Length: 383
Image (tube, rainbow, N blue to C red; front, side, top):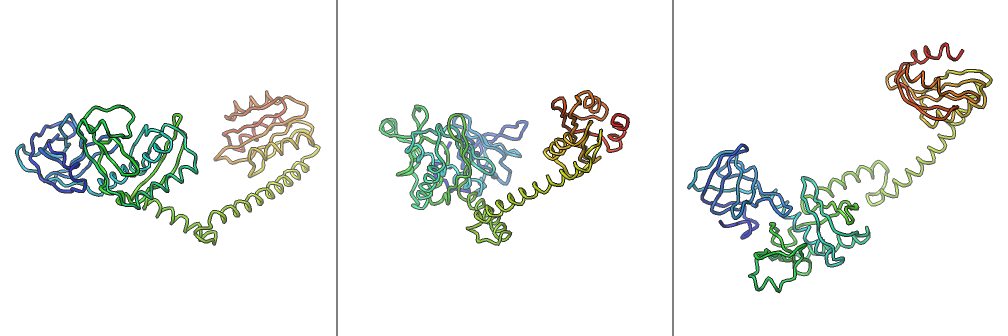
Protein backbone atom coordinates (compact mmCIF):
# COMPACT_ATOMS: atom_id res chain seq x y z
CA UNK A 1 0.00 0.00 0.00
CA UNK A 2 1.36 3.39 -0.97
CA UNK A 3 1.65 5.93 1.82
CA UNK A 4 0.96 9.07 -0.13
CA UNK A 5 1.30 11.24 2.98
CA UNK A 6 5.04 10.50 2.91
CA UNK A 7 5.35 11.13 -0.84
CA UNK A 8 3.69 14.56 -0.75
CA UNK A 9 2.89 16.20 2.58
CA UNK A 10 0.76 18.82 0.79
CA UNK A 11 -1.51 16.34 -0.96
CA UNK A 12 -5.13 17.09 -0.08
CA UNK A 13 -6.95 14.98 -2.70
CA UNK A 14 -6.26 11.51 -4.08
CA UNK A 15 -8.01 8.54 -5.70
CA UNK A 16 -7.47 4.93 -4.63
CA UNK A 17 -9.13 1.53 -4.87
CA UNK A 18 -11.09 0.14 -1.91
CA UNK A 19 -9.48 -3.19 -0.93
CA UNK A 20 -11.67 -4.10 2.06
CA UNK A 21 -14.62 -2.84 4.10
CA UNK A 22 -15.46 -4.35 7.50
CA UNK A 23 -18.39 -3.35 9.72
CA UNK A 24 -17.65 -2.67 13.41
CA UNK A 25 -19.57 -1.22 16.35
CA UNK A 26 -18.10 2.24 15.67
CA UNK A 27 -18.43 2.28 11.88
CA UNK A 28 -16.82 0.66 8.82
CA UNK A 29 -13.08 -0.06 8.64
CA UNK A 30 -11.93 0.62 5.09
CA UNK A 31 -8.56 -0.14 3.54
CA UNK A 32 -7.23 1.28 0.26
CA UNK A 33 -4.38 0.44 -2.08
CA UNK A 34 -3.02 3.96 -1.43
CA UNK A 35 -3.86 6.73 1.04
CA UNK A 36 -2.94 10.28 1.93
CA UNK A 37 -4.62 9.94 5.34
CA UNK A 38 -1.93 9.92 8.02
CA UNK A 39 -2.71 7.37 10.79
CA UNK A 40 -2.28 8.32 14.43
CA UNK A 41 1.27 7.73 15.65
CA UNK A 42 4.42 9.25 17.07
CA UNK A 43 2.47 11.71 19.22
CA UNK A 44 0.68 13.11 16.15
CA UNK A 45 -3.08 12.77 15.72
CA UNK A 46 -4.53 11.21 12.59
CA UNK A 47 -5.91 13.03 9.58
CA UNK A 48 -9.65 13.44 9.13
CA UNK A 49 -11.66 14.14 5.99
CA UNK A 50 -13.88 12.19 3.58
CA UNK A 51 -13.86 9.22 1.21
CA UNK A 52 -16.42 9.68 -1.57
CA UNK A 53 -18.07 12.28 0.64
CA UNK A 54 -18.32 9.84 3.57
CA UNK A 55 -16.78 11.13 6.81
CA UNK A 56 -13.53 9.51 7.93
CA UNK A 57 -13.80 9.45 11.73
CA UNK A 58 -10.43 7.93 12.65
CA UNK A 59 -7.31 6.54 10.97
CA UNK A 60 -5.08 3.89 12.56
CA UNK A 61 -2.21 1.71 11.37
CA UNK A 62 -2.29 -2.08 11.67
CA UNK A 63 0.90 -3.67 10.39
CA UNK A 64 1.35 -2.40 6.83
CA UNK A 65 -2.34 -1.50 6.50
CA UNK A 66 -3.95 1.85 7.19
CA UNK A 67 -7.48 1.50 8.56
CA UNK A 68 -9.96 4.28 7.80
CA UNK A 69 -12.94 4.28 10.19
CA UNK A 70 -15.81 5.56 8.02
CA UNK A 71 -19.32 6.68 8.85
CA UNK A 72 -20.78 4.53 6.03
CA UNK A 73 -19.55 1.55 3.97
CA UNK A 74 -17.69 1.73 0.65
CA UNK A 75 -17.88 -0.94 -2.05
CA UNK A 76 -14.82 -3.20 -2.31
CA UNK A 77 -13.16 -2.77 -5.70
CA UNK A 78 -14.61 0.70 -6.26
CA UNK A 79 -12.58 3.86 -6.67
CA UNK A 80 -12.70 6.26 -3.73
CA UNK A 81 -11.81 9.94 -3.83
CA UNK A 82 -10.18 11.03 -0.61
CA UNK A 83 -10.24 14.60 0.64
CA UNK A 84 -8.03 15.58 3.59
CA UNK A 85 -9.11 18.14 6.16
CA UNK A 86 -6.19 20.38 5.20
CA UNK A 87 -6.51 22.94 7.99
CA UNK A 88 -6.24 20.16 10.57
CA UNK A 89 -3.36 18.43 8.74
CA UNK A 90 -1.37 21.63 8.23
CA UNK A 91 -1.90 22.62 11.88
CA UNK A 92 -0.59 19.24 13.08
CA UNK A 93 2.42 19.47 10.74
CA UNK A 94 3.22 22.96 12.02
CA UNK A 95 3.12 21.77 15.64
CA UNK A 96 5.19 18.65 14.97
CA UNK A 97 7.90 20.37 12.93
CA UNK A 98 8.10 23.23 15.45
CA UNK A 99 8.60 20.66 18.20
CA UNK A 100 11.43 19.03 16.21
CA UNK A 101 13.24 22.35 15.83
CA UNK A 102 13.07 23.15 19.54
CA UNK A 103 13.83 19.57 20.63
CA UNK A 104 16.87 19.52 18.37
CA UNK A 105 18.18 22.75 19.87
CA UNK A 106 17.63 21.49 23.43
CA UNK A 107 19.30 18.17 22.67
CA UNK A 108 22.30 19.96 21.14
CA UNK A 109 22.62 22.34 24.10
CA UNK A 110 21.93 19.95 27.00
CA UNK A 111 21.83 16.40 25.67
CA UNK A 112 18.27 16.07 26.96
CA UNK A 113 15.83 13.71 25.29
CA UNK A 114 12.24 14.44 24.42
CA UNK A 115 10.43 12.01 26.78
CA UNK A 116 6.84 12.96 25.94
CA UNK A 117 4.99 14.67 23.14
CA UNK A 118 1.29 15.35 22.75
CA UNK A 119 -0.57 17.73 20.47
CA UNK A 120 -3.82 18.72 22.17
CA UNK A 121 -6.76 20.69 20.83
CA UNK A 122 -5.28 24.01 22.00
CA UNK A 123 -1.64 23.55 22.98
CA UNK A 124 1.20 21.10 22.53
CA UNK A 125 2.92 19.51 25.55
CA UNK A 126 6.55 18.45 25.25
CA UNK A 127 8.53 16.83 28.07
CA UNK A 128 12.32 16.87 28.40
CA UNK A 129 14.59 14.81 30.62
CA UNK A 130 16.28 17.70 32.45
CA UNK A 131 15.73 21.23 33.79
CA UNK A 132 16.14 24.41 31.75
CA UNK A 133 16.38 27.92 33.22
CA UNK A 134 13.74 30.48 32.11
CA UNK A 135 16.31 32.79 30.51
CA UNK A 136 17.75 29.85 28.57
CA UNK A 137 14.27 28.96 27.28
CA UNK A 138 13.90 32.49 25.90
CA UNK A 139 17.15 32.13 23.98
CA UNK A 140 16.16 28.68 22.70
CA UNK A 141 12.80 30.03 21.54
CA UNK A 142 14.57 32.83 19.66
CA UNK A 143 16.91 30.37 17.94
CA UNK A 144 13.96 28.13 17.03
CA UNK A 145 12.22 31.05 15.32
CA UNK A 146 15.42 31.95 13.51
CA UNK A 147 15.25 28.46 11.98
CA UNK A 148 11.73 29.27 10.81
CA UNK A 149 12.84 32.57 9.26
CA UNK A 150 15.59 30.81 7.32
CA UNK A 151 12.94 28.74 5.47
CA UNK A 152 15.14 25.62 5.40
CA UNK A 153 14.06 22.65 3.23
CA UNK A 154 13.19 19.61 5.39
CA UNK A 155 14.48 16.18 4.36
CA UNK A 156 12.38 13.09 5.16
CA UNK A 157 13.63 9.68 3.94
CA UNK A 158 14.51 6.10 4.87
CA UNK A 159 18.26 5.45 4.41
CA UNK A 160 19.32 1.96 3.31
CA UNK A 161 20.67 -0.30 6.10
CA UNK A 162 24.33 0.46 5.41
CA UNK A 163 23.82 4.21 5.17
CA UNK A 164 21.78 4.21 8.36
CA UNK A 165 24.84 3.01 10.26
CA UNK A 166 26.59 6.27 9.34
CA UNK A 167 23.72 8.59 10.24
CA UNK A 168 23.80 10.30 13.64
CA UNK A 169 20.25 11.01 14.70
CA UNK A 170 18.30 11.90 17.83
CA UNK A 171 16.61 8.87 19.39
CA UNK A 172 15.87 7.56 22.90
CA UNK A 173 16.63 3.94 21.99
CA UNK A 174 18.33 1.93 19.25
CA UNK A 175 16.02 1.29 16.30
CA UNK A 176 16.04 -1.52 13.75
CA UNK A 177 15.86 -0.75 10.04
CA UNK A 178 13.79 0.63 8.37
CA UNK A 179 14.12 3.98 10.14
CA UNK A 180 12.60 7.14 8.73
CA UNK A 181 14.90 10.10 9.30
CA UNK A 182 13.61 13.67 9.46
CA UNK A 183 16.43 16.19 9.02
CA UNK A 184 16.31 19.95 9.47
CA UNK A 185 19.84 20.96 8.42
CA UNK A 186 21.68 22.78 11.17
CA UNK A 187 18.98 22.13 13.76
CA UNK A 188 17.82 18.54 14.09
CA UNK A 189 18.15 15.01 12.76
CA UNK A 190 15.64 12.65 14.28
CA UNK A 191 13.98 9.28 13.77
CA UNK A 192 10.30 10.06 13.20
CA UNK A 193 7.26 8.52 11.50
CA UNK A 194 5.23 11.75 11.58
CA UNK A 195 4.22 14.12 8.80
CA UNK A 196 6.08 17.42 8.53
CA UNK A 197 5.94 20.61 6.50
CA UNK A 198 8.23 20.84 3.48
CA UNK A 199 10.17 23.92 4.67
CA UNK A 200 10.70 25.46 8.10
CA UNK A 201 9.09 28.72 6.95
CA UNK A 202 5.73 26.95 6.90
CA UNK A 203 5.89 26.58 10.70
CA UNK A 204 5.20 30.32 10.88
CA UNK A 205 6.04 30.96 14.53
CA UNK A 206 7.12 29.01 17.61
CA UNK A 207 5.99 30.25 21.03
CA UNK A 208 6.62 28.67 24.45
CA UNK A 209 3.68 29.39 26.74
CA UNK A 210 4.74 27.79 30.02
CA UNK A 211 7.37 25.61 31.66
CA UNK A 212 6.91 23.49 34.79
CA UNK A 213 9.00 20.88 36.59
CA UNK A 214 7.99 17.36 35.57
CA UNK A 215 9.49 14.02 36.64
CA UNK A 216 12.96 15.41 37.20
CA UNK A 217 12.85 17.37 33.96
CA UNK A 218 10.60 19.98 32.45
CA UNK A 219 7.25 20.10 30.64
CA UNK A 220 6.71 22.84 28.08
CA UNK A 221 3.42 24.08 26.73
CA UNK A 222 3.91 25.58 23.30
CA UNK A 223 2.11 26.54 20.10
CA UNK A 224 3.22 26.95 16.51
CA UNK A 225 1.91 28.43 13.28
CA UNK A 226 -1.75 29.40 13.18
CA UNK A 227 -2.14 28.51 16.86
CA UNK A 228 0.70 30.86 17.80
CA UNK A 229 -0.80 33.64 15.67
CA UNK A 230 -4.26 33.20 17.21
CA UNK A 231 -2.79 33.04 20.72
CA UNK A 232 -0.72 36.18 20.24
CA UNK A 233 -3.71 37.97 18.67
CA UNK A 234 -5.80 37.13 21.75
CA UNK A 235 -2.99 38.29 24.06
CA UNK A 236 -2.71 41.55 22.11
CA UNK A 237 -6.47 42.17 22.38
CA UNK A 238 -6.39 41.55 26.12
CA UNK A 239 -3.40 43.86 26.51
CA UNK A 240 -5.10 46.50 24.37
CA UNK A 241 -8.05 46.49 26.77
CA UNK A 242 -5.65 46.71 29.73
CA UNK A 243 -3.82 49.64 28.11
CA UNK A 244 -7.12 51.50 27.67
CA UNK A 245 -8.17 50.79 31.25
CA UNK A 246 -4.83 51.99 32.64
CA UNK A 247 -4.41 54.80 30.06
CA UNK A 248 -1.00 53.35 29.24
CA UNK A 249 0.81 52.49 26.03
CA UNK A 250 0.55 48.88 24.84
CA UNK A 251 4.17 48.11 25.76
CA UNK A 252 3.95 49.85 29.13
CA UNK A 253 0.97 48.03 30.68
CA UNK A 254 3.20 45.98 32.99
CA UNK A 255 4.59 49.08 34.69
CA UNK A 256 1.10 50.63 34.81
CA UNK A 257 -0.26 47.48 36.46
CA UNK A 258 2.53 47.52 39.06
CA UNK A 259 1.76 51.15 39.92
CA UNK A 260 -1.96 50.38 40.27
CA UNK A 261 -1.15 47.36 42.43
CA UNK A 262 1.13 49.45 44.68
CA UNK A 263 -1.60 52.07 45.01
CA UNK A 264 -4.19 49.42 45.87
CA UNK A 265 -1.86 47.91 48.46
CA UNK A 266 -1.44 51.31 50.07
CA UNK A 267 -5.21 51.88 50.04
CA UNK A 268 -5.76 48.42 51.52
CA UNK A 269 -3.23 49.16 54.26
CA UNK A 270 -4.92 52.46 55.11
CA UNK A 271 -8.37 50.86 54.92
CA UNK A 272 -7.29 48.10 57.29
CA UNK A 273 -6.05 50.71 59.74
CA UNK A 274 -9.35 52.61 59.59
CA UNK A 275 -11.29 49.38 60.05
CA UNK A 276 -9.27 48.49 63.14
CA UNK A 277 -10.08 51.92 64.57
CA UNK A 278 -13.78 51.29 63.97
CA UNK A 279 -13.56 47.88 65.66
CA UNK A 280 -11.68 49.42 68.57
CA UNK A 281 -14.42 52.01 68.97
CA UNK A 282 -17.08 49.29 68.72
CA UNK A 283 -15.41 47.38 71.56
CA UNK A 284 -15.29 50.55 73.67
CA UNK A 285 -19.10 50.88 73.35
CA UNK A 286 -19.43 47.44 74.97
CA UNK A 287 -16.82 48.10 77.66
CA UNK A 288 -17.75 47.11 81.20
CA UNK A 289 -20.45 44.62 80.29
CA UNK A 290 -20.42 41.13 81.72
CA UNK A 291 -21.65 39.00 78.80
CA UNK A 292 -21.97 40.23 75.23
CA UNK A 293 -23.76 38.94 72.11
CA UNK A 294 -22.85 41.27 69.25
CA UNK A 295 -23.58 41.25 65.50
CA UNK A 296 -21.58 43.35 63.07
CA UNK A 297 -21.65 43.30 59.27
CA UNK A 298 -18.70 42.91 56.92
CA UNK A 299 -16.14 41.24 59.20
CA UNK A 300 -13.74 38.58 58.00
CA UNK A 301 -11.90 36.07 60.18
CA UNK A 302 -9.12 38.50 61.04
CA UNK A 303 -11.61 41.23 61.99
CA UNK A 304 -13.50 38.83 64.26
CA UNK A 305 -10.26 37.87 66.00
CA UNK A 306 -9.27 41.51 66.45
CA UNK A 307 -12.64 42.46 67.91
CA UNK A 308 -12.68 39.35 70.10
CA UNK A 309 -9.21 40.11 71.47
CA UNK A 310 -10.32 43.63 72.33
CA UNK A 311 -13.56 42.51 74.00
CA UNK A 312 -11.58 40.17 76.27
CA UNK A 313 -9.82 43.25 77.64
CA UNK A 314 -12.90 45.43 78.20
CA UNK A 315 -15.66 42.93 79.15
CA UNK A 316 -15.92 40.80 82.26
CA UNK A 317 -17.71 37.66 81.05
CA UNK A 318 -18.20 35.84 77.76
CA UNK A 319 -18.31 37.73 74.48
CA UNK A 320 -19.89 36.21 71.36
CA UNK A 321 -19.34 38.14 68.11
CA UNK A 322 -21.04 37.19 64.81
CA UNK A 323 -20.79 38.51 61.26
CA UNK A 324 -22.55 37.24 58.14
CA UNK A 325 -26.08 36.68 56.90
CA UNK A 326 -28.95 34.23 57.22
CA UNK A 327 -28.36 33.08 53.63
CA UNK A 328 -24.58 32.56 53.77
CA UNK A 329 -24.22 31.72 57.46
CA UNK A 330 -22.26 33.51 60.18
CA UNK A 331 -18.65 33.57 61.23
CA UNK A 332 -18.20 33.74 64.98
CA UNK A 333 -15.74 34.38 67.76
CA UNK A 334 -16.31 33.25 71.39
CA UNK A 335 -13.94 34.76 73.95
CA UNK A 336 -13.57 35.05 77.72
CA UNK A 337 -10.80 36.22 79.98
CA UNK A 338 -11.77 33.99 82.91
CA UNK A 339 -13.89 31.12 81.54
CA UNK A 340 -13.32 28.07 79.37
CA UNK A 341 -15.74 28.62 76.49
CA UNK A 342 -15.24 25.10 75.09
CA UNK A 343 -18.48 23.63 76.54
CA UNK A 344 -20.48 26.63 75.31
CA UNK A 345 -18.94 26.35 71.83
CA UNK A 346 -19.66 22.62 71.66
CA UNK A 347 -23.33 23.12 72.62
CA UNK A 348 -23.67 25.97 70.11
CA UNK A 349 -22.24 23.97 67.21
CA UNK A 350 -24.52 21.03 68.00
CA UNK A 351 -27.58 23.29 68.27
CA UNK A 352 -26.89 25.58 65.32
CA UNK A 353 -24.82 23.39 63.03
CA UNK A 354 -21.31 24.48 62.18
CA UNK A 355 -17.69 23.99 63.04
CA UNK A 356 -14.99 25.74 65.00
CA UNK A 357 -11.95 25.38 67.20
CA UNK A 358 -9.35 27.16 69.27
CA UNK A 359 -8.14 27.26 72.85
CA UNK A 360 -10.03 27.37 76.14
CA UNK A 361 -10.67 31.12 76.22
CA UNK A 362 -10.92 31.67 72.47
CA UNK A 363 -13.03 29.80 69.91
CA UNK A 364 -13.62 30.72 66.29
CA UNK A 365 -15.57 29.20 63.41
CA UNK A 366 -18.87 29.42 61.55
CA UNK A 367 -22.49 28.32 61.92
CA UNK A 368 -25.26 27.62 59.40
CA UNK A 369 -28.13 29.27 61.24
CA UNK A 370 -30.25 32.42 61.18
CA UNK A 371 -29.69 35.42 63.40
CA UNK A 372 -32.94 34.64 65.17
CA UNK A 373 -31.73 31.11 65.97
CA UNK A 374 -28.39 32.43 67.25
CA UNK A 375 -30.09 34.99 69.47
CA UNK A 376 -32.46 32.28 70.74
CA UNK A 377 -29.55 30.02 71.67
CA UNK A 378 -27.73 32.76 73.64
CA UNK A 379 -30.84 34.32 75.23
CA UNK A 380 -30.61 32.30 78.43
CA UNK A 381 -26.88 31.58 78.36
CA UNK A 382 -25.62 35.19 78.33
CA UNK A 383 -28.00 36.88 80.74
